[in-house]
Image (cartoon, helix red, strand yellow):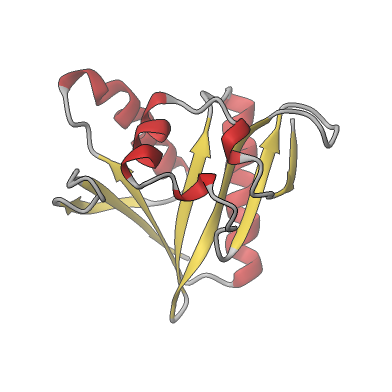
Length: 152
C-alpha cells in the first residue's frame, strides 16, 4: 500500500464500505465530481504503482482560526491500511499546525448499522479524537452524526 497525492478521479474508483457509500449518496456525491476538496488531501493505493487501485482517500479542510475538518472515503481497510490512514492524518495535522480537528461520524439509523458505526467511532478515537456529542439532524438527509474532535 502507498500514500499518494489525491486526484479527483480517485473516489469513483474506490469500492467503498456501505456506510461511506451511503453518506456520499446522501450528500449528493460531492467527491464524485470534478472539483477537488479544499485543504490537504491524499489517496491510499493498493500497491506502489501509480495505476494501482485506490482504496481510500481523505483529507483535512480549513474551518478558520486553527480549526480543521477531517473527511475520509474508504473501502473496508486492513489494520495496515488504517495505520497508513492514521499516519496521513497525523502528517497533515502537523504540516498545517492544526489547533483543533473535527470529524463527523454518521450515527446508526437502524440496528443493523451499529457494527459499521462502532468501527468508524473506534477509528476516530484511534486518531486521538474524543466524542463531544450528537449533532441532531446534521446530515444532508437529516441523519444524526457524532462529533469527534481533538485539540493538539
